[in-house]
Image (cartoon, rainbow, N blue to C red):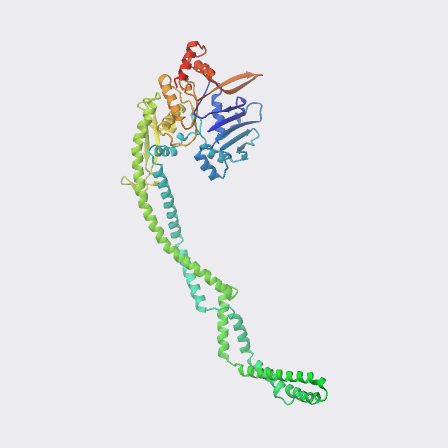
Length: 566
């Protein structure tokens, strides 16, 4: 709900602040007083494009600021969550600054915001109907939404939208899979070859180092044997072997250690050396006996090493990396096989959803056509009450053909849309004998306002924009018809805020809050101001609207009776 509107240096407005109330807010004033300026200013904070002509002469910028109560606005709450915007204590403050320098600003709750965000927010704040823009009725895409709201078909439409989204997603998956089919088959064959090659090799961690060591020994078997045998001879088996020399030294130390016990440690050390020499000699003898002269085994090792080198060139710089790659491609291969299995499930789901969409979209299209007939009659009845007896109003359905598609309606191929089959548009004719044409192209501002007024009366509580603004809703009417329009506005204002600019006293008398707009002339400047009226001032204003320039006691009494009769 719009609580406050602050305007500064905007058109003929110098500066003023006005507080609006819930229910029916009526704005009146002399012709040319600037009532439309209020609508233009409100349009600005709802996200419409700014025009430099709105800046008051002699000033560099214009400012419009609005305070909205958003505590009960569920549509705005959802929108703010989607946009990542916080609503502070159930209030939303929107500020527009239009500058001649071109440095225009949009502030939402004190933070700079793009105009596109404000436009989205504005759709959930207020709906303005009249000669100005921001009218949902002028957008044919909205017409099915009104019809669905009337026929209580919103859930059916939402379900089809969900099914259609899923249907399109599955179609994309299948098309993508088919396009990539050959590449997937090629990749699978490649992976299968690589898996087989690595698996067949039977690699083991550390195998490469073991092979290198084994090949080195096999290649140098003669050198190893010669050197080891020579070392064995020098240590143990020659005439002057190390063993003989140490043994003689040990004998000498043994004999003299009996003379001098201090030599005992040296004797024991020589004994230890003799034992070590025995072990060393024995080990060398066993090693020499184990040396293998085996060219066949060497060839086997070299072949295995060459195989490992070949795998390293393809799959990794080490056996460890090759084995890691092996695990990776096994998982990738399994994934490709799973994709093929899942593809069958996708096709099954697509077929199932296609059948469900065919059934549900056909049923919804039929329901819409039934609802459209009742809808049109009620709109015509509502408009007749507002002095538009000769109006023809109907909903035209157009079903786009799709010869290659799987869907049909009334035994004819039809294209599926996110909202089901076909599109609907309101057709309108206010003149007898004239063929109804698209409402958005032939209806005047006043007619659009009355159509919306009729809509709001047959759609009680089904449209959740909290503030509605009607401009020129009373164009071309008077007398009893004006009273009917006033009653309809009053009815709509139950549960939402309505702002209405009017020149008819019958409508003004219905107000929950009444505001007077007037021009004043001071210091050579013309200024538009707005002020709320008390009961006495309301009587005077409605008397003026009823009787013209000369206000009599009779017109005052009549004005008072009109107010008290509500």
